[in-house]
Length: 519
Image (cartoon, rainbow, N blue to C red; front, side, top):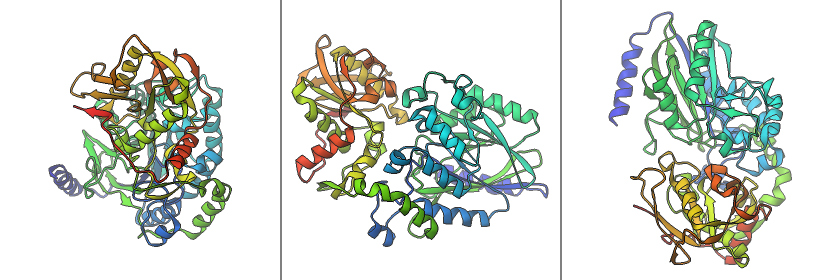
């Protein structure tokens, strides 16, 4: 509360110093949209047409069309930008890849976006197709992509756009761990964003640009580090950690904007649930003298654009047979929330891990490990459709089985909890085993009390493990699994495994059983 009061007072004080030559700009922004073209529920899962009619749903491209049009009408100068991760998350991406995202972003009139790690989920090829289809620049400063022929002549580190007679410098930034989080291929080398961003700031400043906006997919903590260690960055539009910044919402992680030095940091949660709107005023020298705003919730009060509703419905026709197939039922909401599954034992993590283990239990497999970041949604109580299951597990990962020592399992668990404070997707949900972790200890020494099948783990024994092909091949930092024995990465889609397991259970009752304990 004190921070919010201070922000408001500071904004008023800055506003009082405005001069006639001041330049005002409205920055409209989204991040981590993840193919949520249709409205979502309060749990970020699919929302029924009935609930949408009753005003119980959020987001969807049709609401964004209306909200963005209204926001532009309120402003004399505005830009619309994205903090990355338009790709992946629903059947729309599975079916259309980047094509529908490009169409909708063009319709909304985006001015630029940064590359998120999920833009690389299907390699440089799909990203290049998306870039060829959009009407705006796609940016990534902190990587050497000169050796990737699909991107070298198209992707840019930064760009300059004009609005209201003023030049605005836009710079992109992508997670340095993207090679672990996605599939960028061998020809791209990611680098620390601080130096890369500063180099672009210096280059743009030398060209006479004194208003610099970074489009970041680095995450809230990294955005603050960048702000503290660079000069000349006016605004950072964030993404990656699905962070809600707000001065009115009690669930917000920090104020909107979060101010570090002279830099204003923005983030608007995810999935199109909010439209960020910052009204910023620059003096003639490019210094910010006022920065006020608030993410606007895209709830039932925001009317849906009818033409967009129709287009999304048309695009959904090929998906209907798959998505509407009822495959199971849930007796209660099954929690797959990011905040749970990347931090503690979560009901969806238990369900997925147990489903994987049940599928291969007759193959000498004792342990299941599912990365929390691979769990993308909760499931509401009632009938469960295949579309809902695919929203939880959208990555088309396949079941992988392999054999490693107990020492390797412990090393994997240490990796899984090593970035707990950052909410990293590597957090391990498990089956067939239990463990305790202590985040007060240094990474690499946080795991204890590992039990497999009710017995303490034997570091020298070889255990059978089931996971997904992404984790087995080193994704999310699980590089210790790359050299596993008897690895087989070509099992069924994990989403199909989960659907069949839930169907066999009858009505699913979510459960927590203490398999993961945090000291």
